[in-house]
Length: 227
Image (cartoon, rainbow, N blue to C red; front, side):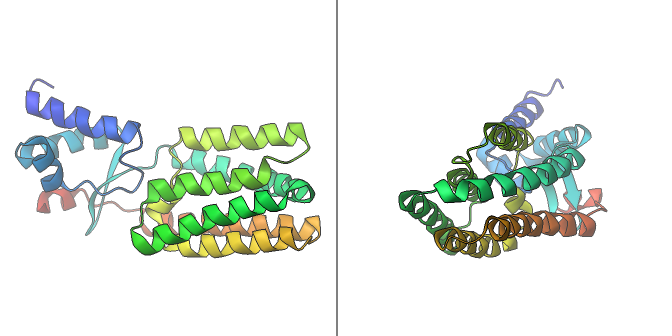
């Protein structure tokens, strides 16, 4: 990589993918990146092709270049495992959650709702989503189960957890399901009912992601040439 502009474009995009500023599903518009770097689209296009070869970028028909989800198969496995342990942890935590905890969960969920209505930012939404879930499961009295949940969330973060970058239409449904979970806990619902609601909530999210992947299996590399 001897061209200085190519190197700069490559490093610029790769760094932002690495630190989460360019989240999974983020569309890489060549003209916008080139303008930011004060260069033509040619080195940006070449940089994106290099990143595609590394598996960090994909191409889709009528969309162009997007940040790829790293190790999607592993992500799915981790998400499914976390669904099981977190659902149980929240059900066990429910009796210990105080009104202040539930109000905090409601406040976070309201921030998520406002974020959808104002300007949807998948990165911020994902951070709030993790905070919401943590508010409910961190009171789990079973330390071993709690450790599994913490490890699961950490592993998903390492894999750049941001489902909502791919399926933003899932966001309002997720917020509504959060509200129902809070209501069940506040009403003192049976542990099995709370666990089932959390499990369904997470299953709905992973189902939306599976549907997305099924409909985007074939990438069209020629799309980048049209930009």
